[in-house]
Image (cartoon, rainbow, N blue to C red; front, side):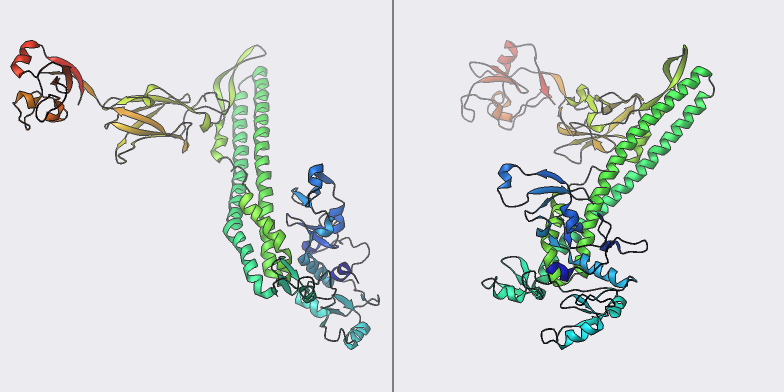
Length: 569
């Protein structure tokens, strides 16, 4: 008896699922029959081996890749439309889904149809040998217990298995029939039977499956709990937002359509024709937006199905599978879970419901002529695209302490056109980069045409950050860097030498004018003790070269007029 015959439960000819409650986990989604030799694709979806073999190839490898080991044919999964690679051996090289076999046999047990004996072919099987995985009639059950080779096998009644509601079948070796996969070869990363461990894997380190199941099972649990379960919740939340956006869009379209109809009833034939035109415009917008939302919903649903299917399979494998079943499917399971947890990227989040409010009807807007009559009323469908908003004005280029700075924010749509309405939530914040506690109050004025005037008055000099946000999102270039300059004034000081020289060498002396001399006595560069350097005249920071150090009286005679210079306060 072949391995497929031992593992596949007997089925009636023409085993298409009959109407009535049937376990969906036991039915192939391609042929709608109970699984026959179920195989597990890399996307963790199960189909019959012959159903997989009949799938149309999606793409084939190039000549250079054909020579390399690995997948030779790529097919589309009938369930999730994922591109999956089949091994060179075809469906036979895929992992057998033992959980699906359990479901098929359990479904067969609970049906009303009688089971035949797998040994003699007579109807009316009453027992099942768990070691040989065969159904037996009463006579064959007695013979099975008499034979020396099968006397120790456990034969359970079919009624007892039906009452249990769940079937745990041993996973048998494909090389040594009748031998259960009880060991795990660590170098080969495969479950093996005792005979394989003694022959094919005799030089490898093999240990009991129950000794390594915790370590490999924990890897699956970690991927599910730490990565995929939170992502599953995010996908469900985004899907809910798409549904809310669809309802909001439809509600807004209905509201605008009502406004259009109410406005059009006051006009004659020309206005009625204009009304129909507006309704067609609304329908086009609704169809366009609905298509976008439908696409987002489809992407989110597919991502949700992928993650949910992987999570459910992994959790069912951990909770229902035996040690050998988990180890048998752990390779493909870990690869699928890792690809979803690490390489997957969630589709773009759904638009906020308030974006539907960008669709509005403007009854007072001129709409040209219809049949020679001037009409009013147009449909506006301009949604602000934050990435296209622009900031204009010199207020972001330079500013001065105590002086009002000004710039203009222009809100634009995705086409770069300025929106024709106001009312957006605009936030502007001006903060000193070095003094976080130093903030500048900014005033935002809505002009009602999509532009916003922003004014502010800085109180401290130095580098500042200007944050410009629309709908809590930074516009392009934000935050902007702004350098605030100190305020300057025209200062008229007395033209004299530095305070050190004028006082005869007193280092504590200070300038008599209201200004200050930067550096004190160090400001002079005279070539005498304490002041080596270049002689000069100073007036509150200004410098005029001279050939010698002159006293204050002489300097006053030389330059009776005050030396004027712009200095920092």
